[in-house]
Structure formats: structure tokens, C-alpha cells
Length: 316
Image (cartoon, rainbow, N blue to C red; front, top):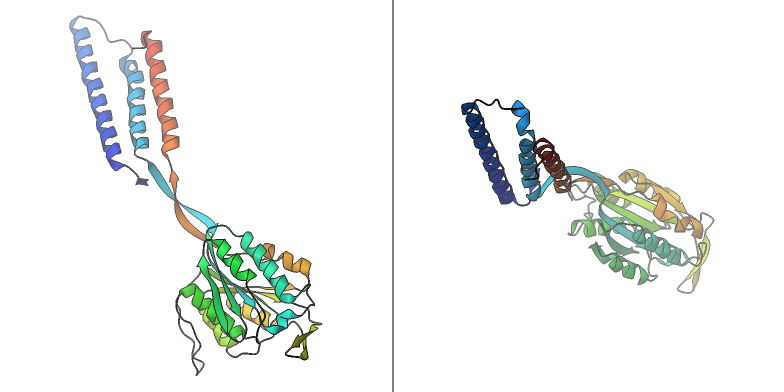
């Protein structure tokens, strides 16, 4: 238990002790005076029950004024979420209306809107390279603006998307070595990556990057945007066939402890926010006790006053 004003507790307890001492001294003097006069003390100890209840109420009230609070474990959705959105040219395909990228942006905005303020959200845009367009922040309007600014360009590198997202989480550069060595980035159990992509990977190091996230306990939820039948997209004057690669996205999610979420049409994309569950973290939060103690003090004071009035017939 913690106290916001320990000094008030000390003062209150001193007052309570002083009242108790005064009550005992007064009772002894009264008993002695009655005994000297040959009068028996009526009621014995019960005669002082009202005074005892009143003093107890003052003691409890002194504890309440000190602002006591108990630390209790409270589970809540919290931590850091990085939304990694594929902006490669293949995301311009229209097998998800109006385009894969537009559908992913809409779903990402809905996801952001569904999160509480306790979740810091960042945005990473990726193609062959990746750029953190919004660092993790409790101000979700920053993430929404970053999502709206995304434009199509380049190819796709899912490995780069993962390492850039890990960089945004840790606040330091994370990269796979030229020899394939993977860095140790520590332990981040409250961090999650949500990746929106069609899975058309053209870059290396996907397995190594996913392994880095897995060792750091960073879950990656992948959202497959597009259809396996695919569509044709025009790039630099050429018409290219592109289709959803579910196997790659599923492998990334399974490696890291996340889940793969297919979104082959607009309706399924719109419901993504409800299907992705972030992890609950347990934190100790203060539970104020003053209100309950004040209620108890008032009950004791009322009972003491009532006992005194009923016994003596006097309020004072």
C-alpha cells in the first residue's frame, strides 16, 4: 500500500492516540469518583462503547486523509504496434477494390481507430527499401496522416519491412549482416507488427528477419491483401500479372507467433481490426482506498454518536 500524504497519517494517528488517552484518563477519574461516593459504575465497559466507536472512526478517517492506495495487477492492451504497409507497384492491382493499397490503407485506418491510447502506433512503408513514416506514438493522428500519404513505388522486400519495423520498435538500426548474421535486439514482449502485403517478395533475408523478431518475442500478424487468382497491373508500360502469395505471409506469421489474416475482398479488409488481437500486458496500477475508508469512518462515527445519545440522552 502507498500513501500520498504520510505526514497527514502521522498527525491523524497522534490525534487519535491523544483522544484515546484522554478518554481512558477521564473514565478512570469518573470511576474513581463514583467509587469514592459509593456508587457502582453502570454498564461496565459497555458504558464507553460509544466513545470507543467514535475514536475508532477518527482513526480510520486519519488513514483516509493520507491518501492510501493499493497496487493491484490490471491486465490491459498496451505496448507498441508497427503497421507495415506494402507500397510496391503490385499493390496497385484492382482485385481488391479500388486497389490493394487503397484497401490496405482503409483497413489500417480502421485498425488505428480501434486501439486505445495505451497503444503506441507507428507506420512503416516498404517496397525494396523501407522507411519509417511515423514513429510509435500515443497520438494516433500521426499514424493516420502517415497512412494517408502512402504512394505506390518499386518492388517488394518483406525482409526489409520486418527489419525496418524492428528498428522503429527498438529505436536503433536493425539489419541482417551481409553474411546472413542476425542481430540480437533484446526482448520486446509488448511489441507487435501488423504487415499489410500481397506477399510478392523480391528481396532476401525474409527467414532471417522473421527469426530476429521471433527471438525478440515480437509477434508479426500478416494481412494478405489481394486474391490468389490475381490481376494485371501496369508498371513502366508493361502489364504484369500479380497474385497473392499466402504461403510466404503465413510462414512469417507462424515463425513469430502471430497469425495470417486473408483479406481477399473489401468486406474482409474492413473487418481486419476485429480479428487481430494484441497481447494483454499486466501492470500494477494504484487503487485508491480513501473512499472506502471514509465510508467506514462515517459508519463508526455515526454508530458512536448514536450509542452515546441513546445511553445518555444527550448529543453533547
